[in-house]
Image (cartoon, rainbow, N blue to C red):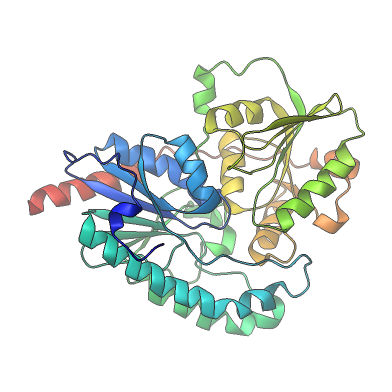
Length: 384
């Protein structure tokens, strides 16, 4: 972000008549955090808020395509660097820790500057730790209250959680996108032994809904496999090449969505494989509904989408990413989704074993979230 006037960063589509406004700020590590903000954005709009998006990179590109009528700010964050292999993953992250802390301070200062130029009643931060401010109501969204560390760092877990909670408690509220009962969808990640004092469960968040398909024509053209690629580089590309290498010479009718939001390309690999750079929510939901099995990462936003649509899946966690590895094991142990390591992935073997893991259907009616947002509206009205 340049050090000049705030007007340089905001799209000119501001509504001066709006009485309430919210700044929505998803983390820019992949598009998962942005996609799960979409249902919240829609509810804020329904409740009469002017919504402004603050993001960067692919998350910003995605949200601008999904919600072109909204204003936006380019809010850069620390660019995470992932190693090509699994080894050294945690040490690579630890070397970047000073940069993460600096980025938290930087985005905190940016928010101060933003609030001097534009009024926001609410700031909604999805896993961005520096966006608290006493001048407005701030909400932190996370399912990572008990981060998964490798075995040789388990001893540090209490200190890591203490540091995270120190940031979370700076916010007015902490919303956990999971269900409280039965360890929810994220297991111990979202169900620590002790919650932050400002935390509450709000149910899962997904831009997809099985109910909405009841009133939509999904068509009768079905696919045997849907591959959803996602996550940071270089692992996204490594995953893509491995999948294509195994699928291009088969007869499976397949769709591959590359997760590259900055492009609008459609290509074919042979007669049976169609490759999209990116698909909007409506088109992607139709293809998900038509697909027999989905091959994808085990990121939490992806899992929320899968159970919202009730789909069977093969999970392939990003190598070395401990959260995804834990979530893959957690759901395989529960006999919900089959999972396999990327280096061990075999297409035919995985498809056959996945038949024993039927997935599940869990939807959120968003009653809890709607009431929280309505209470925010009531509190603002009482102050005026």
